[in-house]
Amino acid sequence: MRCTCCGTGVTRVVDTTTHSARGEVRRRRQCQNCGYRFTTIERIRVELPLVVKDGTPARREPFDRDKLKQGIELACAKRPISQAAIDRLVGGIEAYLEEDSSAEVSSQIIGQRVIDGLRDLDEVACLRYAMVFLNLEDLVSVRCEIDRLLA
Image (tube, rainbow, N blue to C red):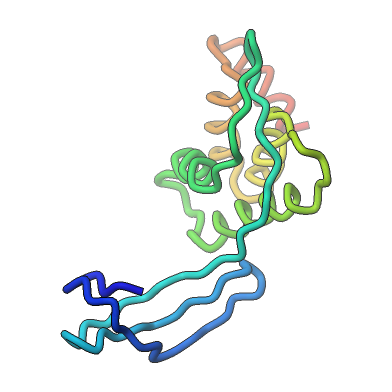
């Protein structure tokens, strides 16, 4: 592991913490050359299914945890939702995809799981996400979605 300050490849692990729920190992490291301390996060890499996006022709792209998290964070902006709750939602969706044995998954399935998860966290964030994901373009379609969310 290279030091992020001086670039030297000689570092030592000072502390290790495991987060079994997220499947991560956090390591606190110290550079032997300059003494700078930094944290690394290790995650087991599993093969996730390809995400099939709607369109003609249908596009296929690898699942991107960061892209999903950014979309959820954008919907949750300025709402009373903790970062830990967002991380749990993203982790739950990722765990669902890991357990699924299929090679491809529709973006509609992922989007619906996000909407269901956000509905439990915050209805406004859920509506924000649904407006973009479901491509709601007018007030009538937004109203129909609000009615569906409230039902």
